[in-house]
Length: 298
Image (cartoon, rainbow, N blue to C red; front, side, top):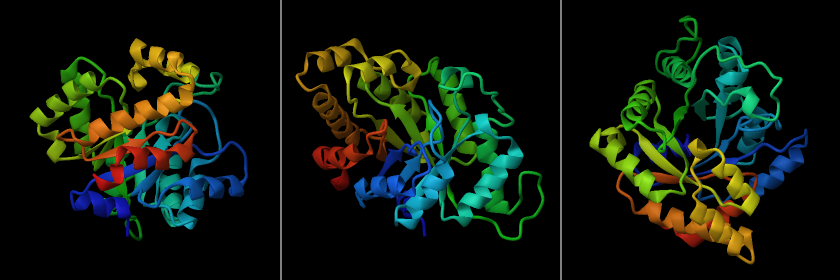
């Protein structure tokens, strides 16, 4: 049984972390990573080539499942048509995956393979609806009956800083209607902006329809902070944050402290049902964030 699904069903505090599949073909590298994740996590979300090409997300998820860690497999529609998406979902379930995070994905020109062709046969909302129909009605993407309906929990991504707010909420409602049971936000650095969005979500009653997991990211360097600052829709990093890391004797330590402070404040906000720890490739920091922010006791 899915630990994450049970947590969401019972209205409990949810705790997840991100995993970036190691570049290469080493199963040992994934198993080493798995050992770093604390067992208090409800699930580990395996990223699917978010900014640069890496190892196989499906293989990584299957290896995590074999290590006793519940994986949620991210799947971007940028790289697959509906035939490949359907096949990969069925294959992933057969390998022990019990959750999917549906995303459209950034355009290839924004990643490290700008020469790649984007597919975008479906967007994330259409993909979510297809998966909901597959699970609840036992129908494949073409409407044909499957032998047995696969079971899984469905998630989507929320962008708290996209404006105007009316369009932000409209897209959010569509994701919930399409079957999203939990929403992972982009990284929160600007708490005031996040709370403005959360107030609007609560006013619309959406927090009662879907579990909102606010994301935090431990910045490990000034360069990483500036990189995120250049892409504000992925979680705006303000000048004050960059200045704080720049003045620190140990920017990585200061970035972790900032992440812990943000997570601790998010824990007390009405409408937040959990925290998602983005790794940025530093999966070993998840346990530290959980311990220092007191997230396990939320």
